[in-house]
Length: 206
Image (tube, rainbow, N blue to C red; front, side):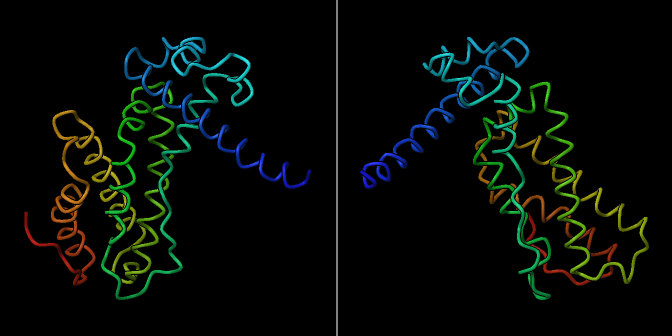
């Protein structure tokens, strides 16, 4: 009997994951089609083809489902403890572009929802922490005061988010993450290197 229970657990877990994925995809599609405010729970369960009781077994309401989608978009956190002094400056930006590129539909849906401002604020804060950690690794504090350091952080983060907004436009979304990252690094790193008075490994020109 114990074996039967153990075998049943993975199947239940797979069903839970499948149901949650279907509900997330349904809400994402509906947001892109009609806007978040116009979507109802009934719309979501009809699109996902699940029962109302099933929906409420996983989520409290539509907002709770949206927050689960936001969690899927969280900025991956490179392990700063593994960074080495000779690592390329801001070498983790490609990982971020690939992360967002793999969830473009989610990104666009969230950006167009009433929680878009919350998602942008949280993303900005995470990016700022990454940029600050990188500047610390590069020992930028030796050459810049606190105000200038924050200026560099805001420039880096603001430009990154600007590139993301540009990339998400329909006419640009076909571009691969590698090309977008190269453009970002080619335009941003020379100025950062000049301000920091550091010799950074720069990508080849566009």
